[in-house]
Image 1 (tube, one colour):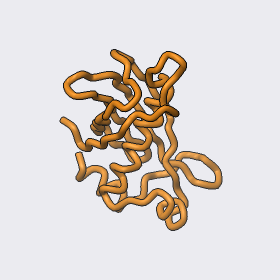
Image 2 (cartoon, rainbow, N blue to C red):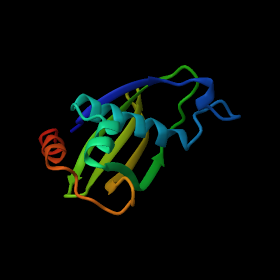
Image 3 (tube, rainbow, N blue to C red):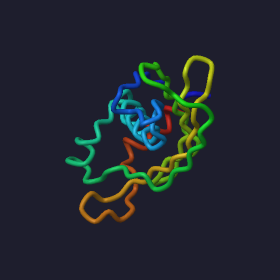
Image 4 (tube, rainbow, N blue to C red):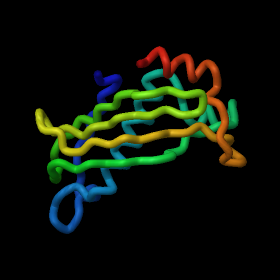
Length: 134
């Protein structure tokens, strides 16, 4: 089940010398999709940092690459929530071009205090919103 879909276009800056999307850029695409997902839920990360004193950070990633994306391709980044804990969210994210899945990633995001970067609980209203989006 997909919780959120965000589309993007591949630009020159996204490609490597071989003319394909540089592998690390999929992590950027996934990050942007998670940010847009939060926005779609009414959660602004800067406001969360300013008002609640917490930020989300990537705790771990694992990405499998199946096929290359190229300049001018339009991609769909599909985001699914796998698990929600009191201080973290586990996602599966996929990059698709049409009917072809190009890459899939398992990303764990943690909530931390913005000044100490120590784990912190996801604020209750944000946690409830995330859980309801599953």
